[in-house]
Length: 616
Ligand code: GCU
Image (cartoon, rainbow, N blue to C red):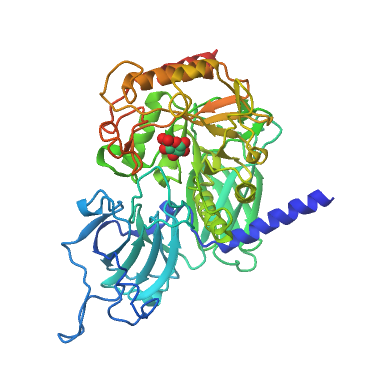
């Protein structure tokens, strides 16, 4: 009885805390005014527009605050800030690639956008929605603060009081600060470029006064290892922005299945349990998506959802009850040939198209949640996704506030994508140095991830114990006790010895769980050719992967997949060999111009062999 009450308490608690978030999901279905395009800016390294040498923060009515209008009330007024066309940045888009002076810039940039708004009729609310801003955003409208958000890769929205909106000349100002701090997530040190700015879409959404804020419509978690029933069971919920009127009903419809079911709204959160008629399950081979319509008295939203089950079962990963092997690749959210953050459907098509060309059925979206276009395209293409929050390397694990920041990003990641069939793994971090404080911190995140979504696997890139046994490297990271998938990064032949060391090396884990190689790779400057012992040559990288593939063919049965590091070369301030790196991490199987390196063909051939073997 005790266990059952604990489960009830935990699920009750997670439902309660779910109610607190105001993040709106499935925003693509909402009526919106896009605020993408040119924004004017002021570079403010001394935070003059925000702080004053006398006060911690300027008073709202201070005319010198950069969130206040830059128009003089009369010719005598002192104005020391202004926004002009001459200084404009494209949104979405990091600032680093748009102007030479921004390449390494870490600091504050003020963005300003003026917009008009057609009169809205009927009962409605307005929300300002940001796909992502790296790293801190302070948002002001017509001189009033709407809110502040931290976290560079997840969405957020602020309600806009209608009284604040004007029909003409709304003055929207966003202070963006991408400085790094020891107590943020990520922390000071990362092996990627600190692209700053409003890096994803911005829109003003209009919703009914009573609206559907978020929902989950997914197949019930299956731990039995069986394939889903012919009429599979959905387990989810619908979250309204506030408690419904008495007698309010919620309708769920799947037109293609001629399915419709009405539920009594239980409160702000209404649990859903229902069986669907016979349907096509989602899988990489059959990425079938169904239109799901959710209706209440005053609102309606719809999404395209795939139905599948995913679970770690013993030492296997089962998709719809069948064991899978993940032919993956790791990807950074970057378009290398334009040296910028990825944010658009075209960017997603490039990156996932390259992964498919490699023969992948899975991608590890490192080391932070990528743009929503990636997970939605992965749904359509049938590519499995590992999605991760940037709890990366030496986070300040002993600081409860940092745990809160990591949890906030975890919740925003899961809220945005918890209906994406392609997403099968929530990862709470990467290569975090082992200590009791760190393991407790990460265990806390894993528990939170399961509270928010118990239908997917949870994992992290764990640490390897290289000294345990002579000819075997063991993944016995204490965090392995709490994950579903034991994943680890190894660079045998790049960071440790030469590639031939793979011939005498074996891997295993004491955990009776599936084993996954979440990174392996070596640098090669595209087009640099030499003998295979010459570092940074394509031939060295090719030899590296030949030896690695031979080693993977000797892995234990629990080996369920791999996501080599990495699809394409990417920018990093840590990579400063002037001949071969020049500010780029060169571990890509594609170079920064989209050319395939010789190692690409080693991995492609192995993936084709695996696929053939699985078809027999
Ligand atoms: C680490 C890390 C990556 C990094 C890679 C490398 O494993 O997870 O973010 O880029 O190694 O050294 O290239």
